[in-house]
Every structure is written in structure tokens, then in C-alpha cells.
Length: 221
Length: 219
Image (cartoon, rainbow over all chains, first blue to last red; front, side, top):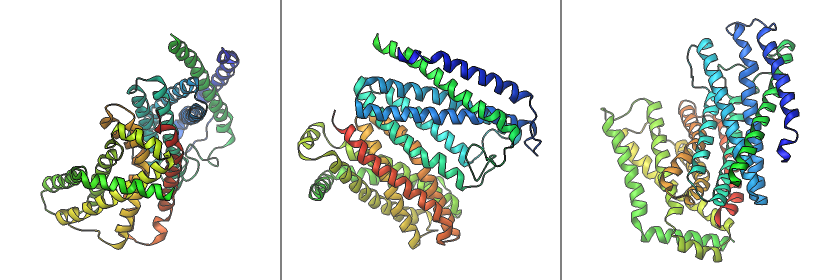
């Protein structure tokens, strides 16, 4: 299968980057900022989760678009697989964020535009799975869920990329990029952060490709 | 195309006038939910503005989901086959968008009349009616495609709620924010950004409904 062709290189690339990110993330020096202190290290693991989730959701949305224009069921399977892996990364992002928030803010959850955005994203994609489960016919399921996927992803754009930039919040990096503020980061952080983002994105792609092969085999039987 | 859209609107209006129970049941749902709020609060009037406005928009949310789910469901499947020969999908979705907007606007005005009658009118100004207008516009734009999606699914009464809640939360949040802020300070500067985002969401929703309904309609 063509999916399996480059899988080894993706795996090697991702794992080597992640090994570097884990060693660097726990051992390198970090700037001593007030309140954050050593907990700033969560940046290397929490923020890449969201980057990976958005990236995989984008791929899933593009595949849905391919399905409704080209009408081949493989695109729908791809879109479903990428979405499920993206939601998994989203849950990991929420979990790491919640543990961090407990120690920095004192509570697991606060009413903050970024937290609301992530919760709504997960709700939207959970209802996407529900929609898929409630239709039995394969083609109909593919068509309807593709339409919902495109609609939901486009409605997410103002929610995730615009709303958090406009309001102040407790979340680090407020008033700029929702994930982090470029000007807050010094070169020490960047040295681990960017490899970590790349590593997690490629890990996401690797998991999705493996899962895709599995899903295709399941559908064939 | 315009003539056909008017035909669909006229047909929808006639159906609603003939089957009065469709509209009346939604209106009764609205009035009884407002009455439940009235009964649960011991005092006959709510003096806290934040609670007043939040409860109002929550009532609006549930009523609009119930009413928009009717917009496709009262079409029988036989009638849908007939439409395939008469109209193009883009005409149908534009007509549905307009009809849902008008339907919601009427419901919202009934809601504000009863709500301020029972719970006190803390916020009846010209701005608020503009806000109702904007709210009806954005909620109907957002929910029409979702109602079309859930029309395709069996046991759809649960599905429409699940699908529409996450999509409608940002809109509702922005509307509540605008109404809270403009109650304190009704200058344009404070609501400007929220207003632009709402317009952006509407543009996205309308254009996507227009494009995607083509793929959804015929099976």
C-alpha cells in the first residue's frame, strides 16, 4: 500500500525528534519566570498537542472536501481516521493543560476563551463521531459526515484563531498567537519547542497512517 | 431564481398557515419555558441584569433549535421528490434561510414580550431589538444546514441537538457578551470587534450552506 511506503522514515524522524525534545525538555535550562517557574516546561508538550490536533483536523477537512468532489470512499476513511487521532491529541492537550492549570492557577478549569475553544472543538468532533455512528449506509454516512466536517471546521476558525486573540486572559501568550507569544520565548525555549512541535506532528501523521491501513482492511472485509 | 425563491417562501407560509399546530406548538414551548423560569424564581422580577439576559438567550437557544428542526422535518419524503424536478438546491437553501430567519424573528418578538411581561423589562431599548434581529439572523444561518444534515438521519430529534450545540455556543457567547456590554455602555466602540466576528461567522455559515447543500440534498 502506498501509505506504508514512507512510514519508516516518518517514524524514525519523529522518534528522534521526540527523544531530543524529551531529554531537552526535562534537562535544559529554562528562563525563571514568576509564577510559571519550572512548570514552563509543559510548553514543550502541551502546545505541540494542539498544533498537532489542528494540523490533523485540517488534513481531515481537506480529505472531506476531496470526498464530496471526487466521490471515492477512501477519502472519507482518511478523514475519519485523521479526525479520531486528532481528537486523541486534543484530549491529551486538555489533560496536560488541566494538570498544569491546577498547579499554576489553582483550579483545573477556568472560564477562558482558549479553554472554551478547546472544549467546543472536542464537543464538535465528538458529535461528528455520533453522527457517523447513527447512519448505517456507507455512502450516505460518508457524504453527510463530510459535509458536517467541512462546516464544523470552518466554524472553528473564528473560534480558535480570532476570538482568543481579542480578549485578555490568564493563559500565557494572551493577546497574540493562541498557543504562545513569539516575543515571550527566548532562544533557549525555541531550541526545544520547534523540534517538539515537528516531532509530535509527525507522530500524529504516523499513528494516523497506521490506523488508516487498519481501517481500510476492516472496510474491505 | 428570485421568483422561484418567492414561490418556495409562499408555499412554506401556506403550509404553516394550514398546519397551525406547527407554529403554535413552538410558541407554546416558548411560553411554557418562560413560565417555568418565572415559577422557579421566587420573586416575580429578576433584578440582576446578568441573570436576566443569560436566561433570555438560553430560552432563545432551545426555542430556535426546536423550531428550526421543523423547517425540514415537516416536508414529507414524497414532496421532496417533487422538489427535485422543480427547484435547484441553491434556490431551496436560500428560501429556507430566509424563511427560518423570518420564523425566528417572529418567535423572538413573542419571547421578548412574554419575558419582559413576566420577569420585568430591564433592557428594552432600541439597541436590544437590533440585537434580536442580529441574533435571529446568525442563529438561523447557523442552524439551517445542521437541520438539513439531521433530516438525512433516522431518529433525528436527538441528533439535531447534539450537532447544533457546539456550533451555536460561540454565537450565543458573543450575543450575550454584546448585550451585557451594551447595557452598561452603549457606544459602538465597545461592541465593534464582537460585531465584526459575528458578521464573519454569518458570512462563513451562509456561503458554506449555499455550497454544501448541493452535496447533501439528493441521495
